[in-house]
Length: 372
Ligand code: ADP
Image (tube, rainbow, N blue to C red; front, side, top):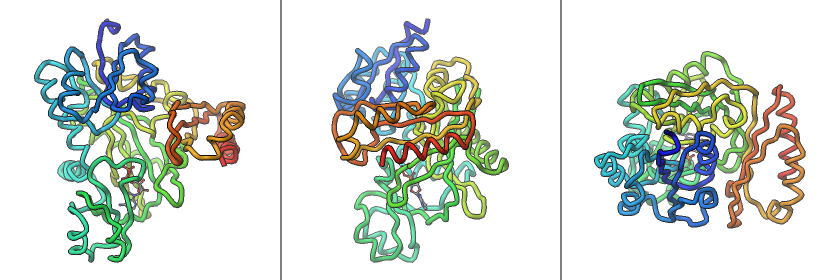
C-alpha cells in the first residue's frame, strides 16, 4: 500500500534530499516543489516541480491529487495548505502549527500560553520602536520571519547599535547568558504516540551564529536532559503535532532550560540520526505523517556532526579535501551537490560515529584541520 501513496514535500534542499533517501526504503513516491530549479532534490525525484512554495496557486496546484503534504522549510503558503486540507489532502504538520511557528513572535506567545519557559521578548516594527524601548538593551534582535542559520539575528548592546537594526518586524529578546545550547527532536503521530531523540549539544563559531559542531549525547546532567525531553513532549502535545519538531533550547548559567525556537520539520540537529539512531528523523517523519508506528529512537553510538561550509579554500582543493575526509574511519560524508559557490553556505556535513567520545573528538580535530 505504501507504494501507491503520493507524498508532496514543500522545499527541496538537503533535508528534502535526505528525506527522499529514506522514503525509498519505505517504497514511497515523493514529489518535491522548490523555487530553485537546481535545488538538491531536483536530481533525486522525477517528480520535481520548480515553483515557489510561498505562492498560493503553486502550492494548490502541487498539492491537488497528493495523499499527504509535508514541509522541509517553514516558508510556505498557509492559505493554500488550508484549502488542500478542505479538499481532503492530509497536511502534516497542520497549517495552524506551521503558521504559528513561521513567526518567532506568535511562536513565543503560543509557548507562553502553554506555560513553556521561553526567552522573554517584545514585538517591534523597526528602528523607531527600538529607540522608544532602548532601556531594554542589551538585547537580541530577531527577524520574526524567514531567519535561518543566524542570518536574521543580531545583538544590540547599546542604543548606538540600533542604527544597524533590521527594518522589518522583529522580536527583541532579553540577552540570555547561555551556558549550553541543546536540541531535542520529538515525533508524534495521529494516534498520539510520542517519541523523543536524545538531546544534542551545539557548539557555535565565535564570530557568527553559525553552528560549528554538534555532539550526541549531550554531556550534561541527567536532570537537565530530562527537563528538555519533558518540554519537547509537552510542546508536541500542545500543538497536537503530527510529524516531527525540533525544539532548540538554552541552558542558562543557573541551569534553567528555556526554549529558544522550534522547527516543525527535519532539522540539522537530527543529521546524526541517519547513522547513529535506530530510526532516522526522516524515516520517523514519514512514519508519523502516514499514521505508522513510530520507530525506536535509541542512540547506537556517540557522534559529532560537523557542517561543511563553502570557502574559496575548499572550492579550490575539493578533490584533496574530500579524499582526506573519506579516508577517516567512521566519518560519514553527506555532500549536498550544490552547484553555486557562495562562501559560508552549508554545502555538506560529516557525521563522525564511533564507539567512544575520545575517538570521535580526536577525529573531529583532524577534520577541522582538513577543512582549515
Ligand atoms: P536562527 O533561526 O537563525 O537559527 P536563533 O533564534 O536560533 O536563529 O538564534 C541563533 C543563535 O543566536 C542562537 O543559536 C544563539 O547562539 C544566539 N541567540 C539567540 N537568541 C539569543 C538570546 N536571546 N540571547 C543570547 N543569544 C541568543
